[in-house]
Length: 156
Image (cartoon, rainbow, N blue to C red; front, side, top):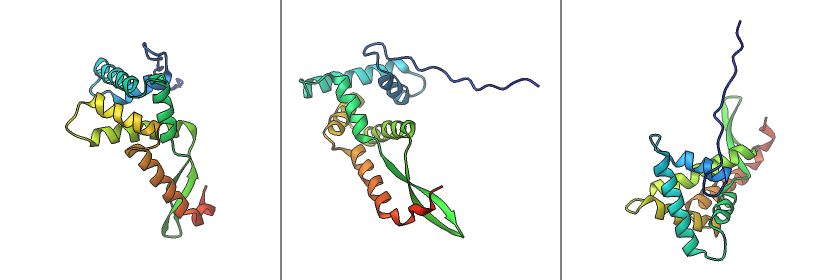
């Protein structure tokens, strides 16, 4: 019997800032394998951020924005004796990052009528200031977990 090994592609730091988080974000932003388009959208958004928030490096603004969107706790469904409960649980670091990236992308894709780079710049600037749709999603997730903390003893 041969050994089956899972091979994952390595994520390389982005060429402009050398940030792994930026590279991951660009990969999630990308549609139909068009990485150059995703990179252009991301870098144009960071240039807009540099104009809006001139005293801080745009990559630092981006990283802090993602940090501000990361959820600490979430609810998961758990079936106990025929009933489903929303059980609050801690979120591990990797899932925090992917949820934050997903929520930012959902927030910009829901807005219509403007170039994606401008929508992304607005959402990142809002998340940096703890505002915007992605941060609202995080707050709602935390409120839901807080409302269901009576079921915390069902956590597995």
